[in-house]
Image (cartoon, rainbow, N blue to C red; front, side):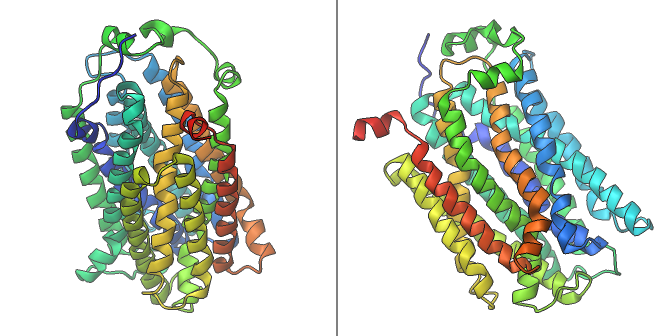
Amino acid sequence: MKQKQDLSFWKLWNLSFGFFGVQIAYALQSANISRIFSTLGADPHSLSYFWILPPLMGILVQPVVGTLSDRTWCRFGRRIPYLFVGSAVAVVVMCLLPNAGSLGMAVSTAMTFGLISLMFLDTSINMAMQPFKMLVGDMVNEKQKSLAYSIQSFLCNSGSLVGYVFPFFFTAMGIANEAPRGVIPDSVIYSFYIGAAILILCVIYTTVKVREWPPEVYAEYNEAHADAADQHVGLVELLRHAPSMFWKVGAVQFFCWAAFMYMWTYTNGTIADTVWHTTDASSAGYQEAANWVGVLFFWQAVGSVVWAMLLPKLGSERRAYALSLIVGGVGFAMVPFIGDKYLLVLPFLLIGCAWAAMLAMPFAFVTNALEGYGHKGAYLGLFNGTICVPQIVAAAIGGTVLSAIGSRQCHMMLVAAACLMAGAACVALIKTRSDSKES
């Protein structure tokens, strides 16, 4: 088997550039879903249930995309056809979702329309997102994978910078941030439209710039033969033979993604309560708070971008991973106790440190452990379950947890802090070759 050669920085960049546009779509979704459904009339205790659908679609779609792309060899590539189709569907749905309250439908019908749109949006985003991770696994050697995923993390968070701040930016331009009860403000609708346009342009760039290896070249650089993907092995069988690293990193992932599920679900209500002192989703104060949440998520992404550049310089990957999660946990714990909107930037910068590590490090650990394994795309699709399952669990019990801690959404930030600390403790399970050499 030939050793994969080092790739230039720009080749690594091109492999992941389309992620910038995909992440704008994801940022718009994560920052505005609670806002959209609260505006449509959802109760805070049922709000987390709307968040079950995105990770549920992810756990269904990504293993299928991974398995099918393992078996796909065509003139457009192996992974890129799925990237392009997923992005095209996402563009259409991004133009539909924010109009859920503008079509003259009853509240229940508008929520159903919103849920169906959300289902297609998250399905398409997941379909577009997974190929980028698999492209790195296919074409980048073990030495450069941490750098490649750090570049991916940088682009991902840069896309978030843009997506999160769109509603605030459009409001500052004079576009309406208020609307009749049950109708989504124009500032949000325009954000989704522009995000859709940027998404398709970024994906076209990656499609033009990246040339995947044909089967015979792929076989030369990967221990699994090119026809191994054609062997029909069930997903359960693949899980039985997964490397131990798959499960150890998955334990960390469980707590991390539960924490961020609660951030996405309850930050709008938290900031509206602690800073604007309102819980009425139709009020001007709530919509202003929701815009500010986008700004705070912007600063979270800034923290992520900076921290992603520092991660490779922090020594042991395992130590850097644990430190990042602890710093993020401290940030979550600070949020309920800060009533000044500007001071809230600090904890969200700290939360960004955890997010950077979550995006870059788990896939570096797992793809290195998968060297020599066949069905790499299927394994990475299955590994997405360690992202989706904790979100599904957290969303399913979110209303119960909220009731148990006093029904104030700001208290869910403390729950998120505890989850990240538990994730940091689980990092001790991870052992790599470099850790063995150090000991």
